[in-house]
Length: 159
Ligand SMILES: Cc1cc2nc3c(=O)[nH]c(=O)nc-3n(C[C@H](O)[C@H](O)[C@H](O)COP(=O)(O)OP(=O)(O)OC[C@H]3O[C@@H](n4cnc5c(N)ncnc54)[C@H](O)[C@@H]3O)c2cc1C
Image 1 (tube, rainbow, N blue to C red):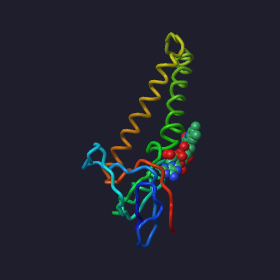
Image 2: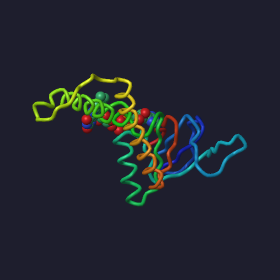
Image 3: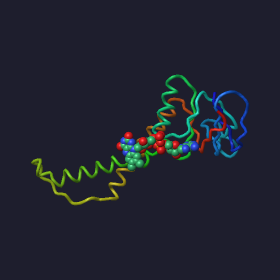
Image 4: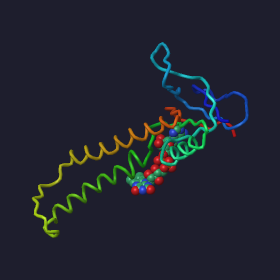
């Protein structure tokens, strides 16, 4: 059993299993307090995953598939390096570069086009659109699988 305790007090309730804390209160969808936000002081899960990058969200999704109750603690954005700064945006940029190359050399393929250059603002917008749509899809998948997303920095506080 894993426990998420909020807010930043490291002393966590009794019981066996891993204890994780997060330094920001978790937001739970559903009920709201007087400030319009929803906080819980403690919640138990079969598994708490620290970090929602490729490794973390894959582990969380698989664990939920196996029937475990899962919390995914992420201090930035679910998707991590790969989705927001690594694999996905770089592949979008490479695709734009590939389209430019192909259109510049299209005559080689028997296709006549006029290449007018690269509009970097449009390339950026294309890249951001790809990342945004995959981010939305991932958030939807995590939610659909019943995984509780906790915004904040997690810390392992006991074995
Ligand atoms: C430019 C670039 C291009 C890449 N291209 C490819 C590619 O084409 N193919 C490929 O396979 N790999 C690629 N990679 C590598 C890939 O991005 C990483 O292998 C992958 O992101 C690792 O996933 P991860 O979950 O281990 O870590 P990350 O993706 O870094 O995720 C870690 C997450 O944990 C969060 N976190 C960390 N500590 C805590 C904490 N204590 N509490 C809460 N949250 C926390 C972070 O905010 C982050 O979101 C690329 C990387 C870069 C930089």
